[in-house]
Structures are given as structure tokens and as C-alpha cells.
Length: 611
Image (tube, rainbow, N blue to C red; front, top):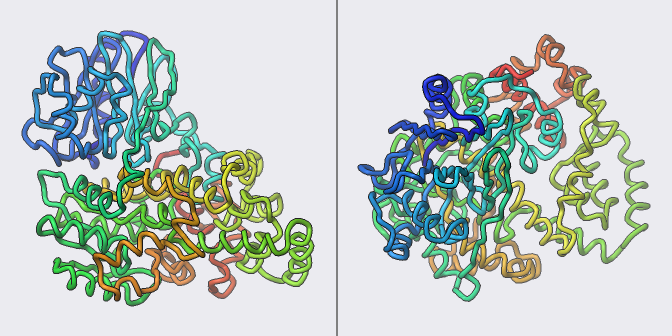
């Protein structure tokens, strides 16, 4: 796990003149790789690396050149099947024991198609001196981040947008991306919040040659459809345990992390880490009971924040976007990093195997639509709206009615379910003059274009979220909060073969008769005690209604002052005053999330001096 940055240039590079800029890029990503740094400058390419040493501690330094010196790579991530690939490419003259070098071997022998053999999480830049061509490549799930910007004959890239900004120029706010983030709670598509800086799409290679770029899909093969889930889970955890440093695991009271801990502990001693926060007050106690059954040490930390403003400043600087659930993830990562350098996470189990309450609600919506299809839905919804006219704007009851009335427009139903709120009336309520003048495109319109239309609504939801929410929300903040403290977090449920197993099955197969996560639970019964499976699901999230009047109150008070609201002109100060005057209630969760995102947006604008 590391930080990579650099650029490809049409004009010849003067190494001496570029030294200061390259050093700024390296410093901007120091947190991602505190163990070593390296830079390599060619006539038309410069590659920078910050290393967090996990595999091949002695000979794995980067940038890494091939034996001929005409191929160079900087790599962020881990290739879990690198030992098998070393055998597969045995004709290649390996010089190190690192997983990085198998990428050079794959490219040398099989070209871009060779990247389809990689099993792991990765983002890398490769410079081919012979062809005078560069590549930016990202893993098929999008576990590891990679950003780029093209201007003035250069393609500048970095693991985080701040590395690109370090090359010079002003940070300009992408108001379109901010608008979609305020709706979806994450940056959508390939956008960042900085104008002109984009993400490399998952499973994509960007090819650069003499200023021309091509976006190429990297072929990926699945070998999983004929294998049993038990085999794939064991294989996935075995792969993710590959390291030359100690590995730990996150442990909640649920089944996903318990499965990971059970399979990992069978390979040898492993410690588990728990943060005492969640929907279920007994979450920490449940995690401790699971750990006792597994016979693994369980270290726990209470949810306590000494200086919530300074912590949020740090988080926003690392995240580069506002996030509503990053605080607790950051605290858990910081706690684990005190003890290990690698931690396994249960992220992906709910997403692949239909484990969220939202999946159940979407399935119920499908059934309701069969009973009262078409016009009957909208008529009943209109009547209910009139009955609920006194509810606060976008309250929980209003959302339910809006969702019912939207059927069978499934992209809109899904959007409302996930709190997309865009409308002219709510824009005026929420936004300040700068956002209103920017007139960003409709979030529901963007969703309609991106939401799969060739699947049943529940499967469309799962596919959409795997390509969007998984990448730009869950994996984004998991990467940033862990790398902030020099911790590598691995996600065995997102092993590419395991993803292939789940994708080969229908929603009815994975969630028969509405039983969430049924297939995974059936497997879990073979390796976990029934008490673990019987626990109710607990979300790893704050009670936002309590938090805005408690732990988050200093952030809200400091960053939503009238002076800041007037200075930035992004949000409506009257909306803030109205929400804060009302009694704190769960039915106003949307309003509190809006305040939290607004405050973090102001933090970000000031941290990056954004225009």
C-alpha cells in the first residue's frame, strides 16, 4: 500500500526544473507511504513513489525498473496471487521478490491483457520508454484510488487529488460534483470536487502517447461460478493474508467480520479490533463474545473524541470530500494502526449478498407495485402528500410517500430510498446564491441515465451501488482514513472470484423470499455459532440526531456561522437557522446530514483554498 504520483509530458522534461514540483507531490502523499520515497525522471515521464512496506521489505522499493531499464512502474496496492504469477511468468528475469514486479512481467509477456490475471487491489502507473507511452491502471472493483488531470501537454496523476494540485495552479470547486454529493453523499461517476481532476474508472487502463489518451477496458476473467462459496471464501481470505508484516482484522458483532476472523484465525494467530459504536448498544459486547468463541484477542476502544474540530480538519484534508460516516471508520483505523500494519475488513458482504434493509425495502416496493401498478400509485401518493403537508421538508414520512408515488420509475424510487432529494423547491431551501447561480444538472436525471434498465429493480440497485456507492463512498473513505494513519485495510469479500460468484446469481437466489443475505448465512452456519447469526443487524454509524447536538456540535457551531455562510455563499443560512431552532428528532435525519455535509464543505474549501 503506497502513494503514487507523477506525470507524462509531450515536451521534454528538465529534471532540475521539475525537482521542486515533484518534491511537493511526494510530500503531499507522505502519509500513504512513510517507509521510503523514490523518484524516476525520463525525458517524457516522471514517476514518484511513497512506500508503505508490506511485501518484500528488503528489495521492493520503487519506482521499479525492469532488467533492461526501459519499463518503469509505481504501484499502490497488493497483488495477492503474485507467487503463482511468478511461476506462470517464470521466463521473465525477476530481480526482486516483490508483488510489484509481476506486473512488469505480465505487461512484458502479455501486454495489457496480462493485467486481467492480477488478483488484488491496485492502482499503478507504468512508463514504456521504448514506446514512449504511459499507462494508468486501476483494479476492476475500484478498491485503490487513482486521479488524473490533462492540461498543457501533460497528464498528471496521483493517488489523491492533492498530489495533482501540488503541481501548481488553483483549486477550483466543481459545483456540479458538490451538488451530486449533497444528494448521494458521495462524488458520483469519475468526478472529484476539484474542477478538471477526474478518477480513472475501475477496471480501466488509460493509455497516453504523445498527448493522446485512450480509455481501455482491462479484460477480467472469472473462475468462480463452478466453485462452492466455502472454497471461494477460504481462498479469498488466504489471499488477503499474504504479507511480511502482522495482519489483524476488524470485528463487529455481525457475521461478515466474524466469517473473516474465523477463516483468518485458522491460518495462525491474529488480533481483532472493535470500536464501541453502532446502532445496537450491545455491539461491542457481541464482538467480544464472537472473539471469545473464535479464541482471538479482541482489543476495544470507546467512542471518544478529544478535539472533534481538529480531527475533522484532518479527515476532510485526507478525504478531499465531505463524508457522513468517516469519523467512526477513522477512529477504528487509528486504533488498529497502533498494533498492526494490515487489517482485514468485512466490507462487501452486504453489498454482494443483499444484506441491507434498503434491499428489503426495494423488494417490498416491487411487490407493492404489482398490487397497485401505474396511476393508482401516484393518485394515492398525492392524497397522502396532502395529509402530510405539515411535516418538515423531506421528512421520513414524506420520503416514503414520494417513493411510493414514483413507482414504477425504479431509478427514482431507488434515489428517494437513498435520500436523493433534488427539486427546485429544495434547492432554494438548501443552497446559497453561488450554487443556485451554477444551476447544476438534475441528480435524478443523472441517476436515470446511470441506473441499469435491463434488470429487475432489486438487481439494478445492487449493480448500480457496486459500481458507484461501493467505489465512491465505502471504498473511498476506507482507503483514505486508513492511509491517513499508515494502515493497509484489505477487503476479502471483494476478491474478484468471489465477486464473480455473487454476480452469477440472481437476487432471488441470493435473497430467496426476501431473506437478506440468505446464501451467506447458510454458509456461515457451518463455521459460526448460531448465537452470532441470531443477532440483529447493527449499522456502523452515528445516531446523527444525537451527534449534531453532541459530539458534532462544535463542528456545526464553528463552520456554519453566519460569517462563513455569507463568505462562501454555497448554502442557505436560513435553512441552517431553521433546523437548529427545532427540537432534535430522528424524523429530521436528512436535515442533520445536510448540516454535517455543509460544515465539512466549508472545511474543505478553506483547507484547499478552493476558488
